Amino acid sequence: MRRSERKRELPDLGILSSRTLFSLQKELYSRLAELGHARVRPRHGAVLAYLDVEGSRASDLAAQSGQHKQVIGTLVDELVTLGYVERRPDPADRRAKLVVPTDLGRDHMVKSDAVLVEMEAEHAREVGEEAYAEFKRVFKLVAERQTATK
Image 1 (cartoon, one colour):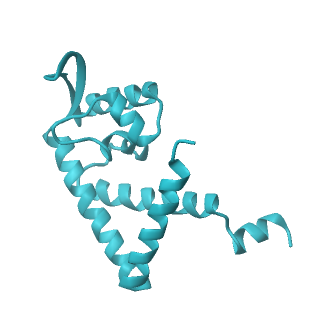
Image 2 (image 1 turned 180 degrees about the horizontal axis):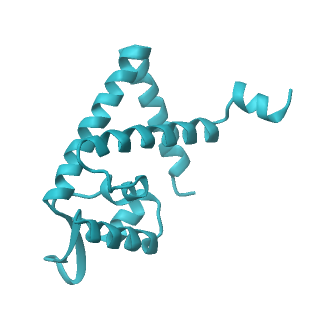
């Protein structure tokens, strides 16, 4: 059996997770575009998916998303230009800045959460509620193990 055939028939964790991520992003951002957020791209998820409504430090966003702080800085710059976030002084440390969602950013966050709830409900209906709950439980364990500092 050729490697490409084997990877199609018996995909490894890398292939399964990348297929899932790219397909999920495509559907999510397509739905978000229909809901008024056509200028946001999947790469912006490294900020918006982890951003607290009260604001987050760029270093925290980098740690949570697994991206370098410089990448997060570039994404924040883009989101500032698009009107989704702003930088404010951190009240806990005036030397630090917080990335804070604007009204547009909060609208995106709420709609994104709602779309993801819908998508997960669709998967649960398709494969069964119990099977989907078990999949999420196991996938969370695998993700935690894979991302643990070694």
